[in-house]
Length: 136
Image (cartoon, rainbow, N blue to C red; front, side, top):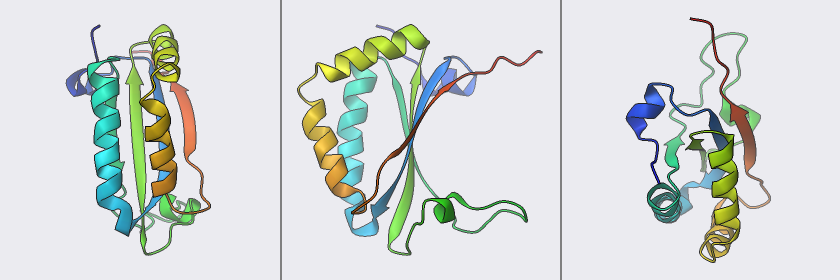
């Protein structure tokens, strides 16, 4: 199965992306890194999904009229805000990967571990986005 490289993502190839925003207590940083690496290795190598993880770099609002995402998700000083992106070639690829993930016995324990590592009482914020084709 072919997979999207980060170069292809940067070039705008792939039409579907899932995003997850979540808060991680700073004390869980290393454990979450290890977990995201395991998850990323599986979905990238076996399912052909590009997987990127980011940590929020600043809690300051960039300009008047904007709020920093840390404020929106109510992050405390002892928490980090993470953004995880999954890129798919197209809707069919996304659906195929979803079916494979549901049938993969490794995914349940990885999910349960991630739920245990995020800030207590919080949810993952998730969105499924389709690329908008702009006239060129």
